[in-house]
Length: 264
Ligand SMILES: C[S@@+](CC[C@H](N)C(=O)[O-])C[C@H]1O[C@@H](n2cnc3c(N)ncnc32)[C@H](O)[C@@H]1O
Image (cartoon, rainbow, N blue to C red):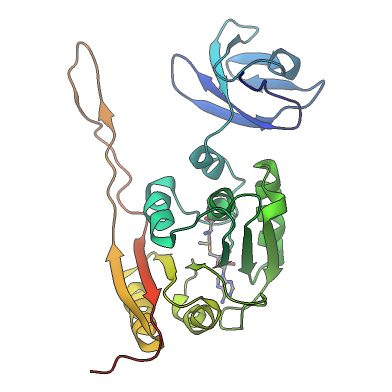
């Protein structure tokens, strides 16, 4: 039986005609307002996901629990975030499973932290760090809205300082303007063979990142850029790619920790 939507959880309203989405936490007595009319939260609570609801002006919406990519896109942004387009590849590179522990530096708005927290499950842990306390506060609020607070520990840390976690971790993620600073502490805390991944916005940062990885003893270094193009599927006007696309979001990097230095 589908679990009905409850007060206290985040929901996503999808506008039937235009495909626009709105996300908020269901609260008893609150009302959702948009330029397409209003809907009392009480008309959504208790409904199953996929239910159709109508605003007071007759606009049709479908109600869902947001998918993890939607939770990432709906965070309150204080920084640039990792987009779902890149997050999928990065998640595969990090090879996370329920119960694992991961360090992240460059918490930013916590968008990628939300994905990490979902992947490690209730028994896993995400240790996330940023130099800005105000960013951490905002990120923790975003993570709480996603219902994932119990899996995340956050702290102020300057890149280059050792990660204050006990024992080894299963993966490390770096999203910093100077990613090379965090490579030696990431190497120290990672279990042998385990992956590191990161994202950088310029080719110069990419070069510095890769040089630091190779210097430190990471191997199997991969660098990629992903392009995503939406496709319009229409009965009369034909099927073809959408004219506009996001040109560039970042260079993605993945590597694995080898033990010792290269012999040859
Ligand atoms: C692009 S944002 C990270 C975005 C995040 N991955 C997300 O998806 O929301 C980069 C973050 O790195 C932090 N940062 C920059 N330099 C730093 C340093 N030297 N030490 C620690 N954090 C740093 C910034 O404060 C900022 O929050």
